[in-house]
Structures are given as C-alpha cells and as structure tokens.
Image (cartoon, rainbow over all chains, first blue to last red; front, side):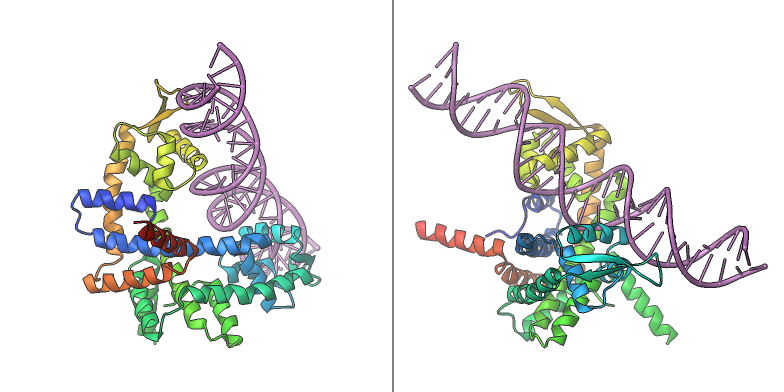
Length: 177
Length: 177
DNA sequence: GGCATATAGTATGGCGCCTAATCATAAGTC
DNA sequence: GACTTATGATTAGGCGCCATACTATATGCC
C-alpha cells in the first residue's frame, strides 16, 4: 500500500543512500503530490465519459452560474487560465454541443458564450455528483482533523514562492493601513 | 493570503449558496491541490533555466544512478510514464546534449541511453539543490508534524480510486498468506 | 525451418496548457 | 478626422503527457 509514485521512490532512495538527513521531508512532499495526483486522475476519469476535462467542466460550471452569458476574457480570468487556452476549450465545448458563441452587438470585438440546453443540463447534473465525490474523499474527517490538515498545508504553502509572495503582500498592506 | 485558486473559490461559492454542508471538505481538498500545484510550479520554474522539465529531470536522475546506461523501456517503468512519452523526452534531452542513444549489440530492438558529460554534470549538480529545495518546503516541521500530516494524507488517499484498489490488493494478499 | 506471439522503440494524433504574434475594434488624444 | 494605444479573440507553435497503431526484432512451439 504505497502511496508514492515510482519516480519519487527512486529519488528518496538516492537521498537515503547519500545520507541526506532530509528524506523525511522529501517523503512528506511527495505524499502531498501523490494525493493531489490521485485526485486529479479520479476527477479526469469521472468526467471523461461526458467528453469533459477538468478545465472544460470549470467553464461549464462558470457559465452555469451566469445565465446571461460571459465573454471568453472573463471566463479566462475566473478559471485562472489564459485567453488562448479558453479559445481552445471553447472550441471543444462548442463542437460537442455544450455551448454556442455569438458576436456581441455593442462591442464587435466581444463574443458572448452561452450554454446550450445540453450544456445547462450537464452543468446541473455534474455539479452535484462532482462536489459530492470530492467531499467523500475526506469522509470520516471531523472538524479537528480538517483544521489540523488545513493548518499544516498552509504552513508548507507559505514556503512556496507563491506563498512567500502572498505573505509579503499581506505584510505590506498591513503597514499601509 | 488566499491559498485557493480562482476556479475553486467559485465552486465553493456555489456550494455554499446551495447550502451544501460539505463545503469544509471541498475547501480542504482544494487546499491540498493548491499546495501541490504551487510546488509543481516552483519546480518547473527552477528547472526551466536548464532547459529541463520535471519529467526530463527524473530521466536524468535515473540515468545518473545507473552509469551503464538504460533502455527507454526501463526508463519508462521507473519514471512511471509510457514508453511513447519517454521517446519524446529523450528526443529533447538528446537534442540538448544531455545524453546519447546507441543501438544494443545483442538485441537489435534495444537502445542504450547514456548520459553525456554535460548530462552527468547537470544530474549531479541539480540533485542536491533540488532535494534541498524540496526539503525546505517543510522547514519548521518536527517529527510530530510530519507524522500528523502524513497520516491525514494517507487517510484521504485511501478514499481515492487508487487508494481503494491498493487497500483491496493488500487485503487479498493478507488472506492468501 | 516456419509461424504465432511477445517485446522494443517510435510515429501519429489528441488534449491541455503556455507564450508570442496577429487582426479587428474601441477609446483617448491631438 | 487621424494617430496611438488598449483591448478582445484568435492563430501558430511548442511542451508534456497520453493512447493507438505501426515496424523491427526476438522467442517459443510445432
């Protein structure tokens, strides 16, 4: 019952051989990555039968929230990918009949993306099963487990580049206040 | 100082609006994913200056361990990717002068992959800095922190498809014994 | 020896993501 | 009104990964 992936085991092996001393931290890091990878795999496997990827599901879900339609630009912002990526994802979703694109009247550069009935139905049906599945990953966790895990994750996150930057930004904004 | 990504915040928002009840588990799941993603990003950023990706680094490192050279097949197994993927990675690494391919004498289907001096040097130099960086993510964690985090991750992992399968396999093998 | 089968490596095409470049349209400035 | 700049969407090209389908070689069996 080994969580870790082959490649990470090899890395740990080598570190141990060198008597690195930090192998416990290595293993911990790889466990986090392995859990996230397992979740990603499961997610992809659950969406694939519907011809959807995780990224496409996010777009579907975002559009579902805003029935008036959205521009590719806003979708990119909210999904956290580039506009170019959104173009590609929309191509696929349009091809598969989940949505349609129409040119905006007032600003002819803009495109309005709107879900088709099929898209609406898929978004509605998938959101529930999807969130239920995610929640089930942490079945058996009580509030104390959750807080402990969350706190430890955040401590590690503050040591990443993104985390450090966020900490700096927060500190700076507190000084200005 | 928000760990979570845009798209995940939107999902949590919607779940809360629906009074889902399981939003705490959702958030936890997304925190795990966000930490892993942050680590991946940092890793890629550290390797990019050397013209290496994470996958390429793994191959470099595996080859470094076995100075006699390795076949693409074995590399794929040990790295946990398909043979086709290895072909692509080797193409890039060969182009950039990290290694060379030569046909095996005894089995003419086989190819022997061997690091070039540049490849050896890169592997040697990068392994240390890389593992040190990974370990630094969990700086400040004592043994008890590590065990707590590891245990919680494993509990969640056992709820993934891969984890469930591993548990079943383990149980089956215990019965046979 | 001859044939089925397994194995090694690769080519091809797809997906998701990126960056950089392109093109159309809007908006601001003189 | 003309010019610059900003903005929206897309295209082009690249990377890493995959699955599938090939080619070449090896091996087992009759």
